[in-house]
Image (cartoon, rainbow, N blue to C red; front, side):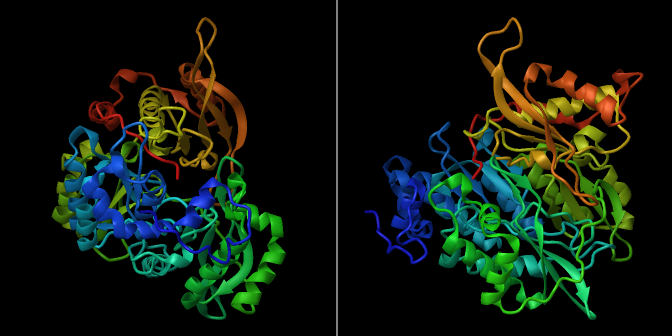
Length: 542
């Protein structure tokens, strides 16, 4: 029986779209007490709105392409995982055979594929025992809190972001129990804490950037980053500096202003940046002061270093220890991959790995005496320390293999394109190429030097009907002079995309044809057999 929740003050009297009406009728967190029942009766008997909407508050995503097989999204603050957590995730994925897989997302967390509703109570219990949870990881909630993937080991870090990302995560989710204060936002909310000058996170709704003022290390506040079907732009400086113990209070202040006043009828206009632009940055700063108290001006927090590549083996700030950045093609992992990563992290390192926003893995705590044996480990045949320049910067959303929103098969096409172009061309340096299957931009297309957004176009001359195609943007950069890309060309059929990219790489990015492509070698080739045999599931943009 559906529980009717009281209308909350910040919704009462407002015009609400259908989704908002469903959220008002029953808070998504309320299905938590019903999950055991759902598992017993089967998905076919679950209320449609609970099944397709409210289960997302517990990270469980209904997939219409494959009824009964769900995606489960975890929370991994700062992208830090230990070997035991990897093994638990591997065992969950392994249960589903060819239907099971795991993706690293652009928010430093994991999404598991092929999950059955009947298994959800046991999965949540096992995740909790391992120190993981899925609470409020989807839809109109505060998402996974991101930070410097090298936190605590980075020779160039200003602050270790881990204590702050964990504090924020615990605050936003009520220590994993679910936080009703922030369980009904107008849209999703992204929080990030930067730890170094090159730790670029300006695509988030709120970013705390470390900066010293009068001898005290605190944070400058940036807000309003957005990548969406309606708008793409980086965050703006609030001109506010706060002490480290004020990050949760500042986050709550902004969230409540937006929660109480944001758009609830026209859903595409519901994002925080739309609200910020509607009231104006200076007016919003005044509103923050009225609730938070007088704001101290930011002495000058800046993101002015080009983001470093994490690939290869590098020294940590701890003497005698190293970290290794591994390339995971388009972020896709099998149960075997997860197990092998866990074993490698124990055999050679500290038993910990880090997930990056570009969908790769960093193994940490490698002793100097173990580097040679680590380099010889078969794992590195799958996940290279030195990928090709095109593959190295390739980021991809889920694509239409799993996602009903996606118009194109981004992951398969991205991996094939990267392999072929790295074999044929020599690029002077890593190039950021972001693929996204639809305008929702989960693949962050406009952050890429080259951005590809899935669409449909008429078949090339001689063909019939509509075919998979891409809109192409150029010029997205991070670090100094950060900017989002601009649309360059629309509706490029997938069959013509390679020739278009090849020409661009040569003309604009200094690529040169290789003399002998037959000698080219790329770990992506070894990855393709497993990847191409994945089960046909579905995955979300929300």
